[in-house]
Structure formats: structure tokens, C-alpha cells
Amino acid sequence: MYDKIAELSLGMADALTAQRRDFHKYAESGWLEMRTSSIIARKLTELGCYEVLTGRDVCLDEARMGLPDPEVLEENYKRAEAQGGDPEFLPATRGGFTGVIGILR
Image 1 (cartoon, helix red, strand yellow):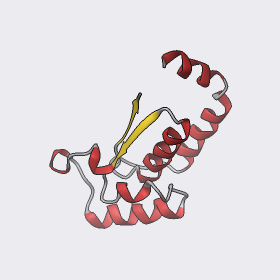
Image 2 (spheres, rainbow, N blue to C red):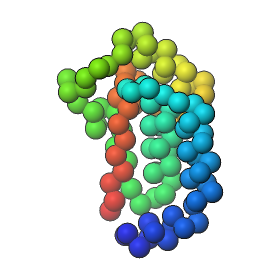
Image 3 (cartoon, one colour):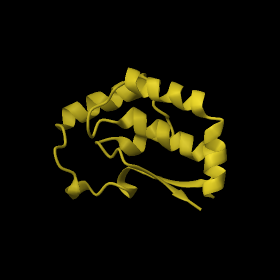
Image 4 (cartoon, rainbow, N blue to C red):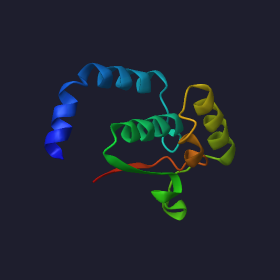
């Protein structure tokens, strides 16, 4: 599996650079990385070698600290929608559940 990842990464340098620049263009603060999380979940899914977990499947509600006010969370969810968050994965991030895990199989 690790050899496959190394092989894939060799041909992805330009795409990864473009993705990093996109994330910086649409910067998000802590617990508000809804757009970023949804896009990462999509990219991991597209790679085809991951089980992808998002939202409440990876974030324990009562363990989160420093969470913004509900109004700020909702405002940033709407911002993520408007700025191209992935529509399949974005709903799982609502309320600041911005974790994403890709599990190698």
C-alpha cells in the first residue's frame, strides 16, 4: 500500500500544489474548516483506496474545546457552500464537526 502511495504522489505534485493554494485562498479558522474538510473527504474517496469517515464519526461533540458560537458556525457553513464545499460531504461538517479520517485498506 505504501508503495502505491509513493507512486501516486510522484505524479501529483502540481495538483497538490494547486490544492494547497486553493485551501489558502479560502482560509478557514479552527472548527470552521468545513469547505476544506469536505474537499479532503472527496479527494480521499476519489483515490479509491480509503474508507473515509467524517463529521460526528470522528469528532466527539463533548470533547471539542474552543468551539465558536452557533451563529458563527452556521455563517461559515453557508460560506463553505458558497465557496465550493463538496455537497456530499459538507453536511457532515455542519456545527463544526470538521474531522476527516482516511483509513488505508
